[in-house]
Image 1 (cartoon, rainbow, N blue to C red):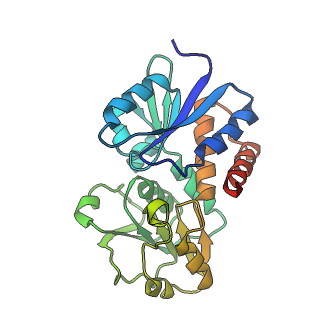
Image 2: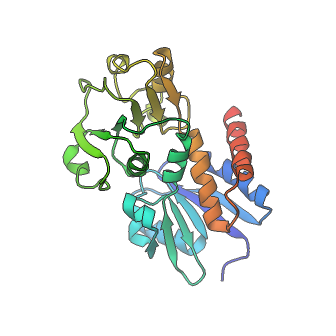
Length: 279
């Protein structure tokens, strides 16, 4: 039998820069509950063994790169939205062993763009992994007209993306010559710009130069990446993934604990994020 303390955590391949423990600690304090939230790094080779052990140990977990699709195999009940997306970033383990999968990236991304009118616009996404899938579905619900997913390997990605019924979806090869000049919103959903790839961009200066002034450049990485710095120089709106991280984390916490997804909760988590970044 598990302890009464709620055991939570984030699971991924590389978690050195993760701020999830800090924001979830703030949520735990706000809710006044007994809980722990830790990092669990798992290699691809050990994933099956270690994820089974964690599902026995934890009450809930966030799933990050590169396991948002791989985790589906271990879930008994996939939420309708997560099923539509084809990726899970939040797992809840109930008494009796029922394992539920949700996608809170959708909420985090969609809410982070609520001040922008994207209806009828064209969007370009760089990358086609688990995070990009949630972004795709959110963009469809925001009524964009056309989404171009630019990837290095079209064959690997094209049949693995969510089906979109209400906007045009095109998957194309991305390279240093790809034309993105007519996009209204450019999204980086690749790891380029963080970790060992910090200081790099997923595209060239020339490609950024082609964006119209006032375009939106959104990097799902939650730091001020080189791409965002260069976008601001070109008078584009630059957004990083910090608000998406905070919002998805708040919804995850609400799912695990039943705590109201309130602005007060989100505010406490936001304060914790920026305090951690400032350290």
